[in-house]
Length: 212
Image 1: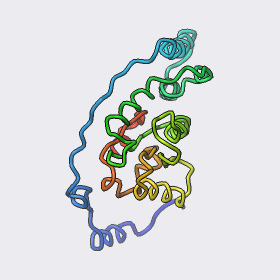
Image 2 (image 1 turned 90 degrees about the horizontal axis):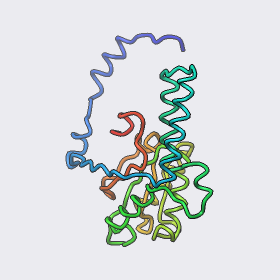
Image 3 (image 1 turned 180 degrees about the vertical axis):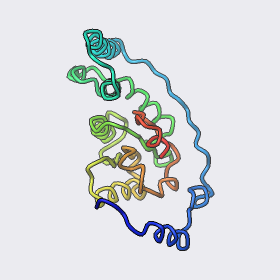
Image 4 (image 1 turned 60 degrees about the horizontal axis):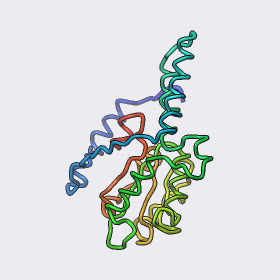
């Protein structure tokens, strides 16, 4: 397709037979979201690893590298991934990112491990983080159990997405849904009837994905 034809007729047809419906009109019971920032610091060697990567990139710039939109975005992505998945540090069995402590505190606050507690949606941006949290939340290390978490991330079929959503909404033993905003931010409706809490372990790089 190189061009569209009859656009005026198409616009007239949409004007006669369609209606713009805002989310607030479709779901008037929805309340305005409450955002609560959670600030935390990386552990000592984790912070040093983060600083080391940033410093190495800045040295490259000083040696003649050019900071453009591509390199800036690449540096942002690399540093963001280190926060929850700090590469070689994960080889130490006694190390875990501080973000897991934030997750544990949220699980305890909401009493997620209790049938009377609240369910939780956990948003990640990077697939490595998604899989790591999925394994963690489906283990006793998190205070939960096998089958306690479902996941909707990029690369799933529509059937797999629907199965994960059905498990989270209809199985009371499934307490957490891990989502990537790009995969679950669009076309997934109904969560507001089962869950009112969402924890962003990683912030999407664009505001539209965060808002969606």
